[in-house]
Length: 265
Image (cartoon, rainbow, N blue to C red; front, side, top):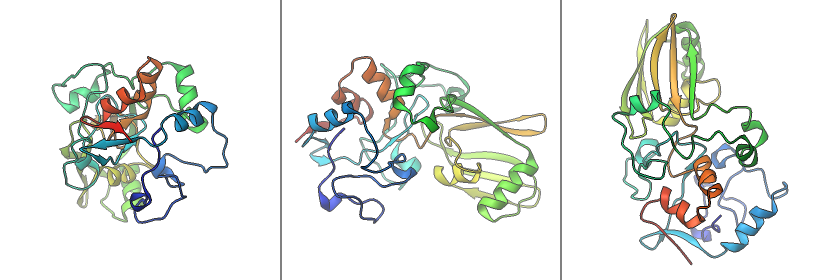
């Protein structure tokens, strides 16, 4: 774990945060629950061992984004946020060697090997909070909606009455298959939404695991078959834990997910 950035950049969406921590107390920072909560001795030792060291790209401290599970391929920065190139937040295969799927849709429909394709229940129990351990199908998942049920969800989330939903069409995808422009067509009207977070919020009562999904029709329902958990940009938490468990150093893990970076004081 790297130390927090200097005060002048230690802000998050314009909010001041706790001195010494580059985090906020909500889902945005993976449910950080405050300094009064119990934490492991190993975590404390990791903080001490890396004190004063930073992840850098061309000398500048990195904006080290991360998500729970990339689904086998990490996503580039521009798919989730601003339309800009961040060289160390590009898409990488989450495995020991580069692999290029024939298409994002084919990748999502398959179950390829990757660091975050983890089935070690003991390891997952160590790295996931109790409430996240209730779900183990986040590498590949499935959600089904009736046209009417999806219409109700769109009405609730977007305040739009499109009528029963006839079609979901991916207009633009990132390299991991994450959709960042989605057309929703109902009997009465249609709407185009994006980027990935808006899509995830619109298509779930809470948050869809990710926007990396393909759409099928089964028995009158719209079925979303998806990959990963979160925006997928930067470090994959489950993949990084599997790498660490296999003996990789923290610098090797960071340089796998953030290409072209260095760790220095």
